[in-house]
Image (cartoon, rainbow, N blue to C red):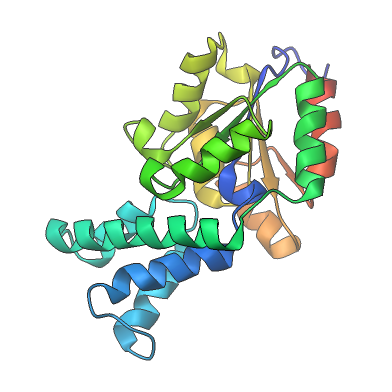
Length: 230
């Protein structure tokens, strides 16, 4: 054991970390704001994409609400456009988990821990993708942003996963993510392991600041880390 904390019984992985390519998110966001006349080449478009980059991991609807200064009508139209665009792109490009991710999640399951996929996207955007990943055996459960009161960086999704599995102690939970928002959610929840995935020292430092207890450069080391704490 690494400490006196209970062993890991639930591993929550951010879907964006395990499966979703950032370019798919950017395309969907660009099409969402285009529904409001904000197109590439304009200052408004540049500001919107900068906001997206800085707020990675947060629910797109929250980012859009801030960008449209609380105009709920504009936000609603843009959010529906985002969901449709992401759903279509995921279907068209056959978004799937890389073999290394599949292998790592399988080994995590082999430690006896349950695996839950969490996402800042709505069920309307990625419900079909999440259901397919569950059918393929990638995880035991998938939760979308609208299945908890608040999305990242709030801890609600992690706590909802705990309730679904009957997890008795939040220290039994590990969160795995590559965005500050998701790791901050893990820290706020009190997760025993808050594992960041980063490529490079600068990103690693940012994830540590967000609350990561460990920062790794890939998923392959996570099964052993979970097993050591189990």
